Length: 62
Image 1 (cartoon, rainbow, N blue to C red):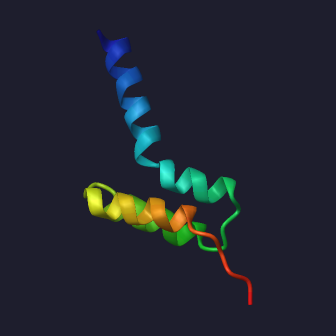
Image 2 (image 1 turned 90 degrees about the horizontal axis):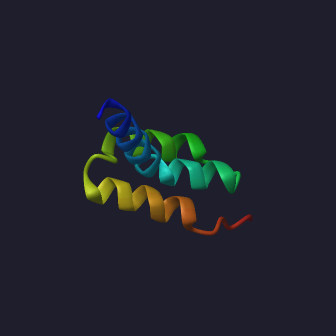
């Protein structure tokens, strides 16, 4: 039972930090800000979705 609980917590944690992982993989310039938004406001669905959209949005280089 403990192993199942540990696996569940691990999978949920990975899913929770999915926006940060995407931003890190895509080498975004604002990965730190996405991580902070995800860490502090990711618990609300709105904060998590905003972080995900921000991580997936294309960067415009001027």
